[in-house]
Amino acid sequence: MKSFAALTLFNRTTLAAAGSALALAALTLPAAASAAVVPPGVTLAAKQELVRNNGSEVETLDPALVESVGAANLGRDLFEGLTVTNGDGVVVPGVAEKWEQKDSTTWIFHLRKNARWSNGQNVTANDIVYGCQRFIDPKTASSYGNVYGPFLLNGADIVAGKKPASALGVRAIDAYTLEVRTSGPVPFLPELMSNPNLGPVHRATVEKFGKDWTKPGNIVTNGPFQLKDWQVNSKLVLTKNPNYWDKDHVQLTQVTYLPVEDENTDVKLFQSGDNDMTYQLPTGSYAKYRQQFPNDTRNSLVLGTRYYSFNNRDPLLKDVRVRKALSMVIDRDLLAQRVTADGQVPMYGLMPKGVSGADVSNYEWASWPMEKRVAEAKKLLEQAGVKPGTKLRFAMNTSDYNKKMAIFAASEWKTKLGLATDIESMEFKVLLKKRHDSDYQIARNGWVADYNDATTFLQLVQCKSTQNDNFNCSPKADALIQQASETVDQAKRKQLLTEAAKLVMEDYPMLPLLQYGLPRLVKSYVGGYSLKNPMDHYGSKDLYIVKH
Image (tube, one colour):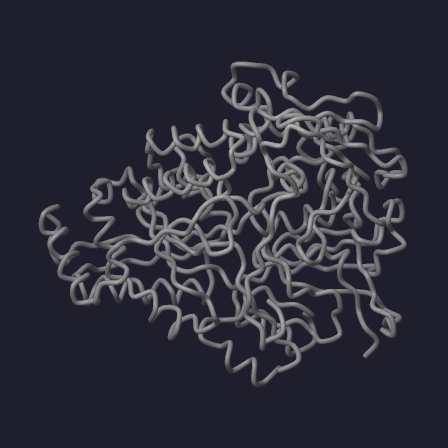
């Protein structure tokens, strides 16, 4: 989502090798590295207020329950974890001013003593402990609990109800020193701890207000911004947190998030001056808007995948031959070049280009001529007893972008296989619930990495993962992932995770389509929007308004 001339993917290396038996040097960076850095010669506007579209109404502001990209965007603005990722996507100190790795499974984080909650109280190690324990505790019912839990010592057993939350491998050595113990080597732990789910939570506020603790007037945050107003399905307004430790480097005084799902409406708001930063351009419109707004168009690939979930429990789709046939006939090149037409690239596997910890693998038939692919797909459907005219059900969240992609897929299935498709559109929150409840047949889905490692994508297909909306299960692949989590040999780990991804995808649990690109319009006066952010984590603290 950068300058229109650049369509690039930036890869990063992990902070340290997992197998290092030596303690790593403590990491310390200047405070300014974790907030907006205004280049010399740039004059700031007197009014530092930003309006940005978030793509949909968020499901929550509770860090433990954050699941969507939109909620995570707000989570990073309102809360700050031990670490953060800056505008370039690089891990830098957050609440922790430095840290060191004692051995392959033990990390020590040193908290800065000037970190404050929005009510002025100090942020302490116990706030991190409480936030992590609450997140992992099955009583909280976080859909991410069994995603991140297994990385932390005893986390998997806590999620399974076998141990209490207090057994989690996160403990306060003193008020400003935290020990984090992992279940195995986790070389990307500093990056993992930048996610809102694993950050601090103000315990007294949660206990006082219960489920209403995130409402305006109740919520206490420790990030660069605080909640001023939340009008559901209208707007969510944040203001600069005067007690934030690095407030002097936060330029914006107010950020308004819009929940606009329709991309055309999003663009109209941009054109009228009511929106400074769109969420995503409509399908097929990138070239048009690049010409119309040459100084405002941003685009880049990110570590993410657009895919369709197959409900592996569905009477029709439980047959792998049907799932394979549906995947084979989708012309991803045509989809990328003619439908989305915004620089995204076809995917035929689980891993996007640029991810650390595994190699990209493709289906063998991806290089076949389409005629051969269609012939094989028809043969598979015939063997499965699926006749032409069979009707498919497709669920998606309301969006012109999603609609055009769905219509394309339905056309492919109709013209090449003789299958009809009913497309149902709904709010994003409704789609989330349908996917989690297995109340669908085929559903629009997508995933942008939480951290740069193959395991974030493997969560989508692991047997017991709450992010596995396909409801597939490959015990052999899970065993390979477990082996990888126990080794300190990085080459061996990569081999195991690559093998696991390839093995599970041979069962066609999902239909990979495109590597995510998020073309958008950003007003030229919005500074700090980097060309090097591989996970689209644009925190508002990294942005500023240039005089115009």
